[in-house]
Image (cartoon, rainbow, N blue to C red):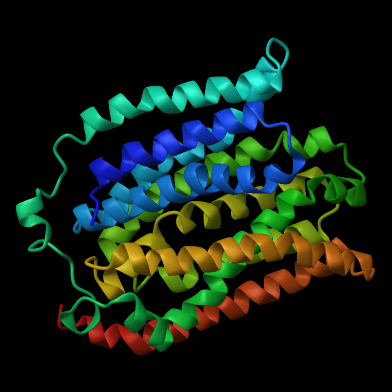
Length: 333
């Protein structure tokens, strides 16, 4: 089994290579493969590795550790689109991909230096594992066969599905409401700021109250967000909607990651989270396609957003039901 200090630099090197291939590729047929590699080695695996490492290395302060680990992603999400648009004035898009590859390569020595001593030395790695339900470590097959996993799947699929769909259709949403697209985009920093604040707050609350008492309710703010997007006709309603959207988005970076460690243990956390990540990636692919198809059948965004709110109410109830039935098995930890 590779450790973080070994696999981290490898992933960054593969990300850099993917950026270079994107910069110099001249074949349309290769584009889907390149985009897959950029998503896998850019957004996917680094986030997966970081959250697994934080969940394993920290127990009492797991929430705060996950908040800090996800801060980089939130900052990048808020700043990189603006930076790329700004430097497009001076560089061709191919040159920007070369710059991105250079930054990825330059991060490798820093990563090696920072991880030269992992929090859990190899001799302690097996001893200091946090156990899950029934005071044991669950394998991926065991987790997949437990009802709790499937009670959580609707929530963990639905969030990336409909968040992705919302931002994918942002231009159409602005047109429907009669707003300028730039007016809508100007509120994105509100979303990002609230997400960062909620990320740290949820981490602190997680350490104090535990995942059991928080996770069934973290999607309730997004219910309000989509209702505001559906019924609101002013930019103020969108502003309020982005606040509630950010609250759920921030909590989504900490609570689900802590959930897998707390209920199923950390020994096989990587493989269990990989299965959950597959469901999330599937959701992010289904969401835009589903909303687009419904638009073709004349289901307006206003109507769709009402049903999305209902979906999140159902998924929250599903989480509450699954956690309520399973939390008694944590008492032996």
